[in-house]
Length: 381
Length: 221
Image (cartoon, rainbow over all chains, first blue to last red; front, side, top):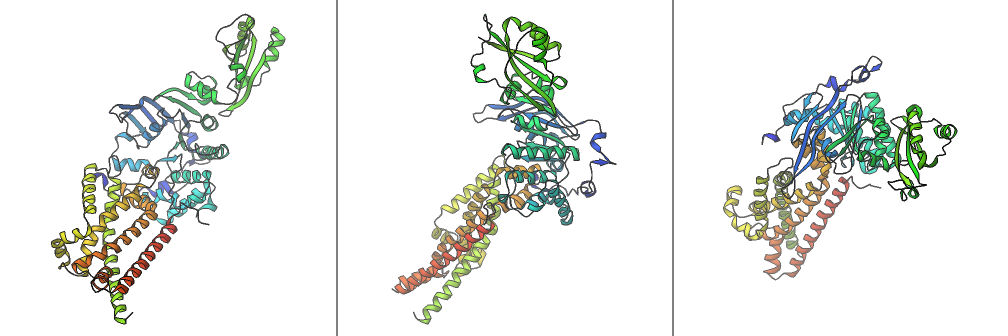
């Protein structure tokens, strides 16, 4: 039973792991000085599972993905889109059927078990249901990866205290998970994931079991960790709010494919793919009010109004463009719905207006000239 | 009740406790790793060895389906090999242990399988070896269930031990049969039953209390 035996005792260089503050050179966080090399890279990765009736199920096909050093990349997809498989490939919990998974220079898929276990110490992971040991206190849970890695007791104690302070749970160190709230449990999960000072943090729907307020505080913590420690974060989620609040880059996954990828603001304000649009439609302000959507027709009839969605990005987000439309062209736009939002820290406004069918082309020209995005959604009688 | 009777009961109680304690201890020693292995050697599991798992499963089931009294007689040569004799309290420990080991293994397998798979995934994710996962995750998390299982096994052993009178093992059951039944002493039979009831109650409540204390999943007021 070769796979059962312990790996050769690999003494993790204590100096490297335990002598904080690792991520800093002088006063500048090291990640600010290093060009953004991908820490995680998937190259043409496919994964098929043997299905129940002998038919193979393809979870991922020919997927490429690069997570730059120090970034927060969010993968969003519906359930069954392949995002769980994707994140499990990164720390080798799943092996790809073909392709390469490169983490910090090593091909995770090709590593033998012992080396893979060692590599996993530099890949932290947090989970939707926290996966804390009920038999261990908060501090003991955080200590577990360090015990497994073979640190001595004194080192473990110091490191655990640091981590408890980092996640703001120093006063709960001796509480069992059953005595903690969901948000506190996830904080313990985060501290545990950070125990061995990983280079990448994988977040598997980490906020999906939490209420919006707690979600917010966990995301703030992750953003702070990303900022202070320069830790690269790869997260998967089905919630738009998560991506919008914390991710810098987003990849939209559907049917085992990454259908769209890029800067969060770009992708969200100019969605190219149907799936991306449908995610955006869930967001408040993007959806049309029912009294409009129920009467919406694809074709114009006489005396109908065109329904136009206007996207205000960046510098134009606060332009009084409707006032100008009325003043300069004497076109009166009828506001149907609208919102001003912040995506990845930048303002983004959406306005849905109705204009007389006869002045559609003039209106569109005018709006485009002002640098706004437009989309004709349909017509209402 | 005469002092002689009380002496007899005391001696028999001692024999029963001795047989049950020693066989429970040895059966746990073998049953724990066997149970852990049964729970972790299925297809795609930590120590995946589906064939070994299946063969062990069949052996365990076969042992458990053999009536205890038949097991006692059937393994007499083996008992003689181990204990040096096939008669007496020490000899009785051999069949008791053999009967209890697969039973305990199944109970421990059940307790281990109750542990959330997510914990195994988390432990793998931070680089634990399969052995570390067993020792630091599965067994500690399953401990309340294991304790309840062992309690059940000890109670069953108290019952089994009543039958080893057949090979001169002594103990309370033997006392009840020889004095209570064969010598028509109903008061002796009653005394034996009462002592057994007290023993079972004691074992069960100690086990329950210990399991409750170990179980951190429930908030203690």
